[in-house]
Length: 181
Image (tube, rainbow, N blue to C red; front, side, top):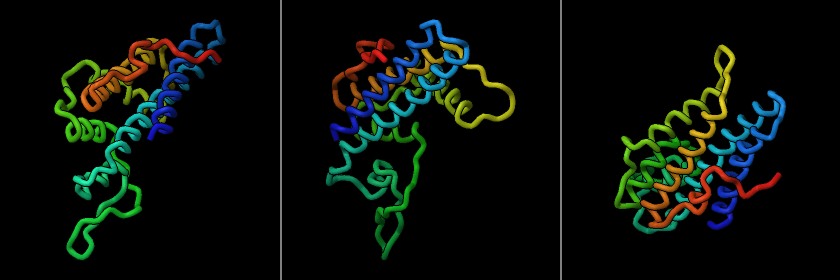
């Protein structure tokens, strides 16, 4: 689905632009808001990319109901002796979907000992702390967001190389955004 891929790419560019805006001399409040926006949009972009990749494989005829359930994030139930996908939402952990996509649709599973994977896990923890604050004040630093967005870009690139045999289009620009807002 090209529209979803384009949307995912646009979200990633927005995340990178918010990171760039932290260096424009904004107030501390502005910088904090830009860092928060960059992190949250970075993860929204990552999830949109994962959803676009999953959508690319949903039309295959060789998928089991459980595989369709993981790709479409729908529940699978046993009905009259056979597994069927129903319309009940069944959210999968993002990491599990990434691992599944590369295990099932590429010849190279994700290397969970690689730097990009461990950095992605750290970025996920940071996002979770921002999304679900508990106790104490959370202070996010620019270098943490740089590492988080870099990890997202690197992991997406690995997924694209493994699944599509081509680089993520945004990979060559690194953290430089095409946006100018």
